[in-house]
Image (cartoon, rainbow, N blue to C red):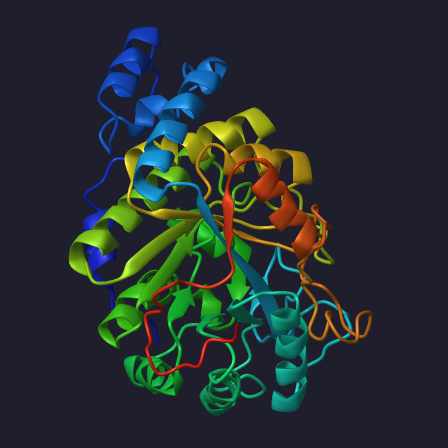
Length: 374
């Protein structure tokens, strides 16, 4: 049975995300008066040759709103078991890959390795398997990590309000759910079976999480999956602005990961060039200036170093995309190949050299019942 439509889905139906032609004068006006209404022009082909201007404008906004602090986090993959069939994912159910679900003890060992490297923000990631990665399992993982990890988020399948409430009680701060593509038709073509096939359930997941008390919400689109990357960036921006308006007590972050090689062998429908990627993130910063922008190790080191100076406020480092990849690598299939293999210390050193402050933990965590390690 399909999930009921969330409120944002109704709002999304009122938006026109169709790309149209813009000229230099349109881009001039958009740069002079940035915001959601100006975003289509900032994402247009006419703006691509002016990406340096967009980058400078975005940098000024980022420094004004966020200063020079960049939060560092690590993904902790707890399972690659999956009951959903997604054409682009290395964990897809039909793939003949080595599967592994970590025990709670093994999750704790992974977390111990990461906290020893300095991390205090961990993102627990799993494939969509309601048996191997059920609510009780996730609650147990969060409870186990809570005494030593001040900020815990999850990127898993969608859950009910009750399950999110249980996770919040256990110590969860954040929920990340990328819609992958906001194009319903393309979504159906790439999500063939399983829980994730339900577009409306996926789209309303952050609403359910916020109403259950989750304090950090992460959304995004997987660029290269949809037929029109500009339409997906527009949808992400409107989604972020809507969440900020409706759930003003939450912290909203956005991300635009690009498809990378995986066991699925999926090829992007429309590849996004580096120049277009910089354009997308810079325009996104100008459209939703209060939203955090997250950058993963999918992107190469040189590009990540440049994007930190433009729009990024949070980034992963030293990442592994396989369950157990920090303590016992090579025992399971990774979700996708990473491009920036530098150590966390090297990424932190890059930030310091560029005049930025790597933030391993918040000075004032959202929860006050955690003993923050020194």
